[in-house]
Length: 337
Image (cartoon, rainbow, N blue to C red):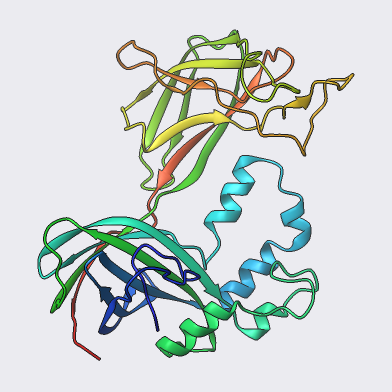
């Protein structure tokens, strides 16, 4: 199989030199997920790591039954979309750092591809893969054949390209991989706030470890932004949002917790529209304010979605970024096929 640095599974490697393969043939379990590392590829430009993640066909079937076409088409809120995405058993939910012979590399780019069993492809008349005669992609079939993957299971293939941080390691004998699960957003609670919310407190717990938190609301203020000079000339953008001021006890890093609007807000509309109504086919609303620290120690600000008309009350949700797997380090012995 031809593998090239900084190319996805579909890349033809034009004007690039084929990388040299070093077999690993290592299979292991990571919190119940079976992973296969078939090979590492190196060359003067950089290195490539292929990761094969096995997904039991019954797990994929259960997911498609739960999120059938009717339910997928009925998704309305960000919370529903986040749940739909996070429960997909065949999604790539991790990153991997790599060093070769104790020399660290710089992660550059990644891509992924999925292969499904025939039963999964044929599972629904309205399946998410193809309307007629559903088939796996040819490149997924090539990977299945090259790496001898079990055809009774579904597979997620990941390819990561790395740049050399120091001198190239062209004949590595050992690879050290550090797997890091990507956090997924999990809604812990919902509450409604308006201009009268000052002094109100809300208790909730983290879905990750059960830690109890107290949210103190300091105020909710309507803001209007002049967006007439941005975006497309023939598009009108919603200009109103609510700013929620709050503090949380105990303090938690902003990368692990946020407060956001339960609703999507209004879509931009075409300028020649006579009524202010959503334009689903139009461009997405742009963000004009980043929520975060308010400048007052211990006080933070959350911004709602954008609306055409002033809104006096917003339903908010508290969201934790939860890692569903502990980090894992694996050492592999490499050899020439």
